[in-house]
Length: 124
Image (cartoon, rainbow, N blue to C red):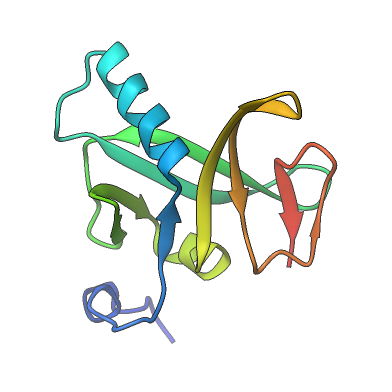
């Protein structure tokens, strides 16, 4: 079978993508500025094994794009994920809340069949 040809997959025409809410975009821009990161930095999101529901979200700032990365832009914000994670994150919106219900980033993922109470893990 061999390894998939990521070069061809990068250029796939997929409807939808990964999105960011206005609140999350504002918070990301604030954090990037606060940490002194330049305009070459972007949001990297991924899915890793773990958490009480089986899969967990991971979010970082990065400035190195890998050949197999899937790149999305929403509201002028570059959002990058690896090819395996995009299958779990497709049509997901990164959001941010600072209300009484809890402060922080969270993912609104229509692909999740079950989420945990903390909102940091899910299953499909």
